[in-house]
Image 1 (cartoon, protein in one colour):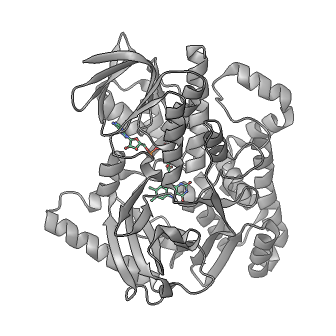
Image 2: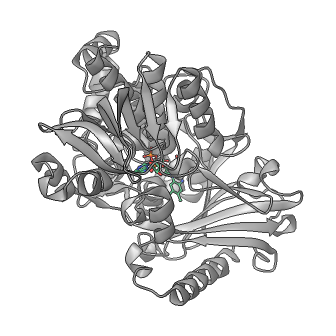
Image 3: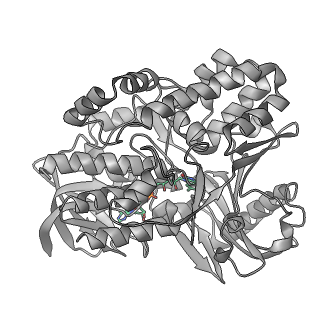
Length: 499
Ligand SMILES: Cc1cc2nc3c(=O)[nH]c(=O)nc-3n(C[C@H](O)[C@H](O)[C@H](O)COP(=O)(O)OP(=O)(O)OC[C@H]3O[C@@H](n4cnc5c(N)ncnc54)[C@H](O)[C@@H]3O)c2cc1C
């Protein structure tokens, strides 16, 4: 059966897809979101087990500030009359690094600098110059409406309103963090720390991390701050869906798109796993580029431009995720919400190298039964490690890997193993299955050093009528980043449709 009453179909209800959908619905477009899973949010979704509410992935939230223009989650929700109460976090990350390097990235910028200066007194000037330059990038971004950089009229307007900020961004667009850090800093251990500051969200070291993204992350944590949504990260997607429906948009769950229908080299509709077809004037894919161009479209017809992109970017690893429920006494008073643990610099990028930890119940205790906490610990892992195993082998491998992670976490949370109340382990296979992401990847990473963000694609694609949104588009991974992509995509599609 074919149904063609929609202006726009969005494949997937990740934050990128939902921001696109809400922006378009608000402008009056008839929007249908098709989500293969039972709830919205994708990597920023949630699940409940035995009284615990776990965040699927993301829990360190940027974009919930109240001023400037980079507070894109606040803005995305507000534009469809939604609001989420948030709880501020006074420290972004507590790093536990090799050679007993312990650093906390305090919300207060001066306090953060003081902490680094105390460890690297000989680099005091360089530290300030480096992080101040990140602020320069942020200040350029934080004065302008962040919309589609593919829309000439908007670009002209923004340039006219903020010429210096625009020139600043043009200057930083092709630059990476490593080059700028090395301009001011020479201590190898401090440069390693900056590598980790980048790796923990870009999953590549400073040399390959675009300066634009670093400008956002290294500054907004001190400006808008890190704020946790009350009730869990899943609230963001739920509220966006509420806003979507309020403005006449629709969402269907359990609706797995298996094909993007094309006619005369133009995307005109989608086909679902149950055979149902829908048509719309524009199709937006919130699936990864690999899923979009290799599964939803015939791979042998992949546009040249897309092939070229794949030559520059590869899939990052996925994660091994431990979702733990633990007794409250496992965590000492003053424990921070987010931690990073690495014992050997050589292993930073290795499988099961860096361990990321989130304990959202330190901010919102309602996510667990009284006197218990949630710990989400995750570490990079490749799909090949878990492929082609019998169910028994798979379970054993998962359990062994979880054991290794818990043993290492005992160094920062002594008594963790003894205090375990609940454990669920996800592998790259779990990420692939539940998030619909090829090989469970976290997203694209550069194959080699590239000119900053210059080669990251925007929302339009070489296939007429098809747009992409989410972390395989500019400016990349992260919930606030995909919200940016959603604003840009919604804007570009709205202009193309005359809204
Ligand atoms: C373990 C982990 C921890 C993270 N931590 C943080 C953090 O602390 N802070 C932060 O900012 N970011 C974090 N991130 C990154 C962040 O979560 C993602 O970059 C972001 O949520 C991706 O959003 P997206 O819009 O690109 O799409 P996704 O979240 O990938 O959502 C895509 C949606 O599309 C659906 N879909 C896919 N294919 C189809 C299809 N064929 N038919 C129908 N539906 C389909 C999927 O089911 C999914 O719901 C983390 C990610 C992970 C995995």
